[in-house]
Amino acid sequence: MARDAPSIDAYGDGGFRLSGEWHAGSLLIVADQAQAWPVAAFADLTLESLGPVFAAGRAEVEFLLLGVGARNAQPPRAIREALLGAGLGLEFMDTPSAAKLYNVLTSEGRRLACALIAV
Image (cartoon, rainbow, N blue to C red; front, top):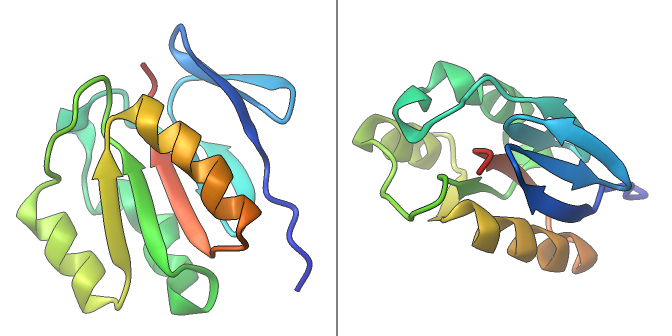
């Protein structure tokens, strides 16, 4: 299947420049499709907020790359266990690091979902 993953060109000021277009707020990319993500802060992160990742499943996603905000923090146990139970990996880090790593991983053809809390 041909990939058409968007690139993250810039981040900060509460949003992201994605393939040349500005997107205000947090961002979720699943199956190479970007969408607004209603998680404004780490405390807003829930299983429900990751519904599109679970819906895509292993057919589309190897793992979730999670940018948790300005500082790294471990996601809640319920989220870690649900991803494990669905057979999906998890990599989490601060949003700036995750935004940079996303571009590298998609260029390598990795099938990942990316959830980034805006900084």
